[in-house]
Every structure is written in C-alpha cells, then in structure tokens.
Length: 236
Image (cartoon, rainbow, N blue to C red; front, side):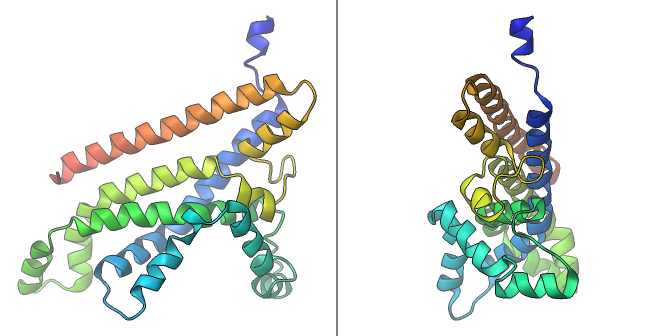
C-alpha cells in the first residue's frame, strides 16, 4: 500500500499537472500563428534590419528566464504601459494569473517554434512555387497548396517541442505570474515548493518523474508526427 500510495497524486499535485497542460497548450495555440508569420518573414523577407529582428526574436533563448519575466512584469503588469491599458479598458489582468503564466511560457517557447518552422520553410523548393506562379496561382493558392504542406512537418515539430518546453518553464513564470497554488503553480513551481518543504522529497520525486515523462512523450510525439507528415507529403 505504501509503494502504491507513493505514485498517487494529491489534489494539489493534480492541479499543478492540469494547470501545466492548460498553460502549455494555451501558450502554443496563441503563439503558433505568429511563429508561422515570423518564420515566413525571416525566411522570405528582404528588408533593412532583418538581422536585428532575427536577434530580437531569438533573444529569449539566451536571456535568463527571470529577466524575461521581469520585462513582462514591467510591460504587462497592472502599472505597466500595456498591462495598465488592458486593465483599465478591458478589465484584463495578466500578472499573477494563469493567463500571465501562458504569456510567459509563450514568450520563452516562441523562438523554438520560429526556428523549427523557418528550417522547414528554407527547405521548401522555391522552384515549385515559381512553377505554380507561372501557371497563374496566386500568393494564397501557392501558400495553401504547396508551401504549407511542405513546411507542415516543421510546424508540427515546433509546436510539440514548444509544448514540451512550456511544461518545464520556471523562471519566467515564477517572476511574472508568481507561485500561487491552483492559479499559477505549474509542475516546475510545485517541484520547487516541494523541495523547500520538509518531508517534500517524495512529492518532488513524483512530480519530477511525471515532468520527465511528459517532456519525453512530447519529443517522441513530435518525431512521430513529423515522420508521418513527411511520408504523406513525400518530403525527405
């Protein structure tokens, strides 16, 4: 019974797991369209300042997550310029909420999606698009019938990897959304609290194993989906 109970999650642990999944899913769903657009601009665009724009997009990969959370707090906090506008005009408060946790994870995972989608887009044979153009296909038709199917493996891979990374985001979330049980306490934050709690080793171990399993499952799913889409579209 003791061994069995060691693998049974408490209500607080279940809330942390569920909240992590919701936050990660919401962050990916919100940022994926912008990631596709950004990847398209970086891959196909020719404009002054492209290198700077590329660096800004990938900045969260090299910045400490706490710094990202602090910048979000300054900009999207109730007293920040964007956060104050949203709160005063629409009653939307992001700081210290689950929505804010989703925003923080979305910012941290955004470069991962952009990078994966851009690599897939760079691999698309532009000769196919040029041939479609000569046959009279418009820009939207070329994108929907040729470019999108060929870059779909990169989109799926980027989305799943970003989802897995969002499950493990800690620094940006705790800085911008805090560690509120049932509201913003995701898996990493619950593990951190368990480590700081006397006799919390068992809880930390359970949640750590679950976090590893979820992340590993996401990576495996990403590879499976990418292979199936490549097989369907005939891409290498």
